[in-house]
Image (cartoon, rainbow, N blue to C red; front, side, top):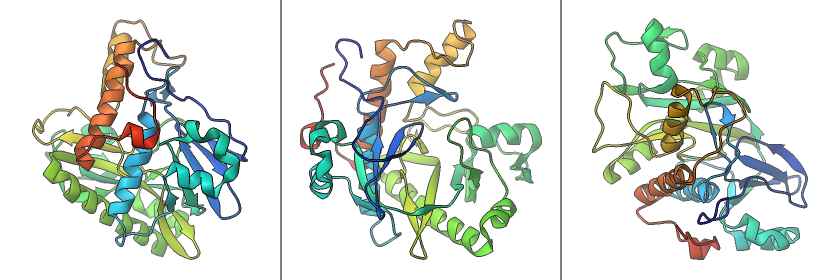
Length: 318
């Protein structure tokens, strides 16, 4: 990381069995019943993982997920046991020497058997859904209403499941494909839970001037019950728009990695980057702008800035 930018974490190495290393999260086995999810500051765009990481990104995703899950208490069951670093270290003493690395970015969770479906809810037509609709008037091959414009609100929101992909894009699939994969009862339960969480999130974000355009959830089985797992209503799993600047008929700026996407688009147009790996070196101002965008989403949604001191995170020196 360049001088003047806080340290960011690209990868972890802990004294626990590493189960998988995803695009952003490193997942460790604590024991037969618990997992440790560590959210790094890695970032990808256009299916390419950047060489540089984004300071505070992992903490934002972790702490925002923990905040949402606390709000959802009594609404839906979930897998989170604790996102408090001190409590996690007390529960797993072997992690004590790694407390600083884990600070703010780790979640102790119960194990669940992951349902291999991304449960996407689209409240507005944008992204891959808009691209398919432009070409065919469909979403996952199924017809949508005629005459929609980019970023139009969808009433009611559409349950738009997708396949899970560790690399590359998730692919939209039909509900009948979900039924074939997991059974009719599970498919219905996934849709019901996803709609419940989405409507809760949309209602909570609306007074803060945030539109939840779309989002995706994951669920897992635990002792015969479906639990909400992984991240929830974060800038990585959701598209957040400003209600103040929302204008149908065009794309909307998002509270996520938009500064990075815009810069990479410019690099491609200038033919300085092919669009494939390896990624170009990110300028400090793009790293800084992206970091600030993530933290802005946290502040707008929760109503308070992330307390870096309380979390034990390095202070922003920019």
